Length: 529
Image (cartoon, rainbow, N blue to C red):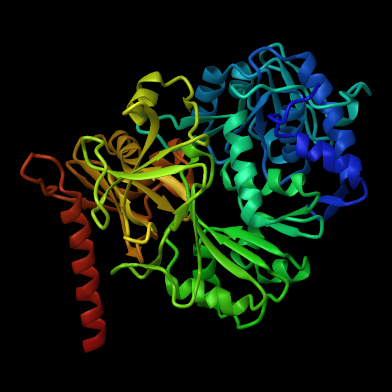
């Protein structure tokens, strides 16, 4: 007897009830629920037979293989672990060594990353795209194309208990390796149950997928879509730069992305009033949503609603929500939309440094409790104990986000307590960037700041280095070998000294202010000229 904890159960039911509905549109092709079920149940049979750790790696994104791999992993009762195609080889090798995966599902782009060094740490079972040549195994693996798999199927999704692992998604970390956030089947089930109440997806919905499967917004899109027998329309990477044509061509009814997209479209003049009449729901998250940007998007979607949502990966995608209203519920003195009220099943508190609740309108750390709070960090019990704590008899996740609660119960996001930032939807810890910066520069005198910042959202990174014999280009080149491009600073300033605060630490605020002052001076010169 199946339980409701397997995330693939919604897809299974939709495939039985509406087999001819399109479930996925990707790479110029569309696939029905019946076709997708055949592919998923086929791969799931082989994943189930090779199950040991109960973890399956997904080395692919924005592809049929990636989505089949995710659903087949869940169908087989295993957790899926998306691996970022932008990671450098050394990072991928280190994580493969740590994860002890049962299998690896690889799409056409992912196959290019299967170097001999990567294969030495890869799992025994590897399933690759039909359209690629099979690489030579380097660690005794069996590498099989999807089309060559024996024609056995697993007819129904495996039972999963509340405590079973649903997925592991990696975020930036301070130790040189990302942190793997573990989300249980019960965490995900609670999230989906609550999110259904306000999204209201139906079989007629056409949902846009603007993010990689390594970003937990993809969890929301895929599993709510398949629960509702709706269709998921996946954008190619190049289409993200100008999504308006994609939205109109596919007549999308639901859109979810970081707010940066609005800014890009406004800059190019692509965001016109009434341009997206098909959109009924637009969801923005991952970074602060400027009120003016939200209002501009609302004018572009005359038949739709605009929601701003908040939630860290550690608490399963979304915990609070604020709808754009007239007048808007704005965070005071920030020009951004509030993050709103929590899900009915979740608790939000603003804590001081001793984890005591603070009164309304007092800034402090946002803390979350409830059934969506995840298991912890993979292989990091120390960090798990630090961030996931029992406080007054209840388990809380300390987000590291600064926030406050208004008298009306609405919550506001005020930035990061520490130096963790969001840059174009990617979560980055500046300490991790600095660690690689010091190695690349050959000096301990190095620091990175998020700059410029517009409406509370970081637009870039600038690093400062003192005491290095290497040029800026040499340092940047070395960092590109160790980090994804989005974590590499846009500029490196070589300076004689770095400012220090009263405790002898590098004063990041002073570095930030120096950039602001420099920009102001340049603007004044341009105005005078």
